[in-house]
Length: 241
Image (tube, rainbow, N blue to C red; front, side, top):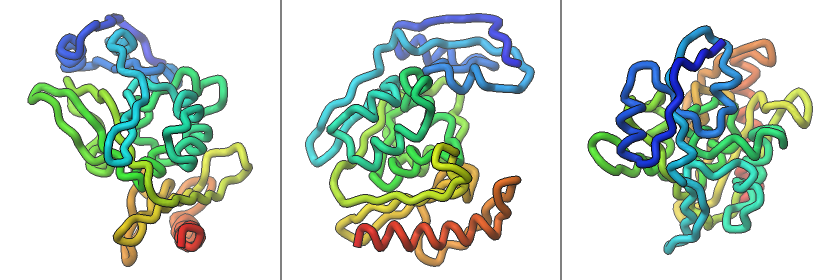
């Protein structure tokens, strides 16, 4: 079990970055992950809620900027976001946890089964990060590939494109279960983007010709997941065509 040996609540980004540079520091941005961690370790909890990183606002160029501490339920309820993103946020956590879990926590965790991350990937999400070198904006796909975040870096917001028709499909043991594999596609001026869950360490964007090597588990072998990926990809691409 996780044992908190220290608890701090910074009030500025600079203070948060300094605290998160400590060895063993854990950002608390909703608590759904830290509280469910089954490993035995001691951590120094850095609570980000006093940084006021919430809020959703429309920007120019068909973009919406979402604060990192915006809750999953706020994503579900926001008409500014694409329907596929809102539905994926609804599926991310049970109703009792959507008011607690945050977008920043979802991104920083990089859950391989996250339909929300897949939806954000095809909507060309860009993650805004504050770190020792200053502010930077990183494509979500690049950030996920480099997880975990280096110490001293704080996710402050995520920008999402809202244009283009999108569709999602999933296969799970039950309708309420996490997907074994899920696919999300979005039409773009150059064709389409497709992202998959359940086939790699994190959700990933896939392109024609990519060779998948999914891990297997009790819900399905790697071969089964690869077959599901092909079927679901075809389904969502046809839906947006």
